[in-house]
Image (cartoon, rainbow, N blue to C red; front, side):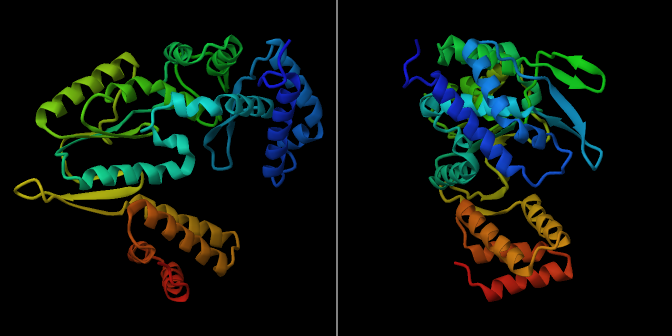
Length: 364
């Protein structure tokens, strides 16, 4: 008999599933009337009860991931809503132990605010003037390259609950339904799955732990990794260790996005970090600015919002929130972020909007 305090108690399972089902129905109520969410909403209690009984009896198997063609012609993954609430229920179970399992320098465990924490940690180490070599790593097709059996073995090192491990394995190895039929590949995770970020954290845990006892600066956000080394000897050891671990995990680096060598300008998480070296290597100047892609995304979002009829006041509020967020991330003033965005705006009305935002609502 399961204790009432256990996460596998029948009442707790049903309450958790129903809570997540309600949230999904509320957030997707605006979708087209032909969307499958409306059928799920009408039979929500039946789906919740069925999913709960299957999880408790050990007979729950996720449905295959299907590929649908969006309005612009690109294929997108679709996960059944019963699978989504089951995955969120598993996240509720493992959430209390994630701080003890995931490496402290793996910053995407904090959610969207993790990118600010990662940049703050990186700036602090750069300004210490102790590091002179850089490994800027980006893994090629990270989600598509995750090996299922390797991930399952890594999960078994951190968990001993057989019921939880069985559900993990079923979600990892579920079938795909493509226009060519069913397939069951040995590699790849769904990027839309609620569990994917947690699995990605576990999969690179050997790389995180490899630098615990080296005097390096290690920062990771998903598959974007920055390692700062003090000497050339340390740099060579770190580079060899990276290649050895990635080979054991069946991963490769993206040659276009990765860099290994002396400390120089690089971009990370939407920010451009500029390094001005000095002759004595003790007074290296570190400055930050926004990456061009970051500003183009903000301008494109403003254009799309205007095309859908958003009021000018709402657009100004979005630009102010955007500037304040990046001001905290890059340790600059929000006004300088807006002025930098203004320099990239090539549309007359967008330039006028940014200028009006700067003049009308003073930002710190």
